[in-house]
Image 1 (tube, rainbow, N blue to C red):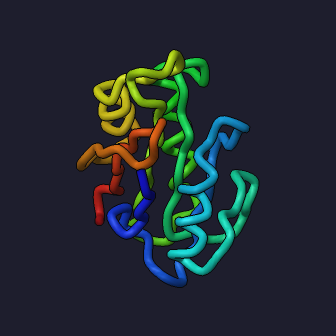
Image 2 (image 1 turned 120 degrees about the horizontal axis):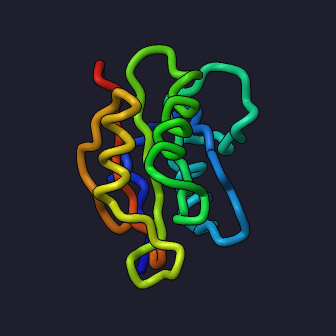
Length: 133
């Protein structure tokens, strides 16, 4: 399966912050986002403004409330409307996190889950928008 980031909505010139990177992430997807934006992904300790974020979330990262907290953290560096993708292992993976729980976490964080799609061979993604976007 090829990875296409154009459907993720990140644009050339945007800075994307990455949360909860681990060795199981999809490097092809990461590289495609960097190629699309023209910038390396910045880590969760980055302190400047960003245009978007990706969160690699697994069931062992916590529950819905923990994800809501992470979503709030992920949007702290946004200067205006922004886009977050919560990337979760597909249902066939043992550390799968239910997309309905992602939607619930988004609501708790004051955000809006708009769609879900397969983004890589082992990962699904849920698009989260700030209420102003």
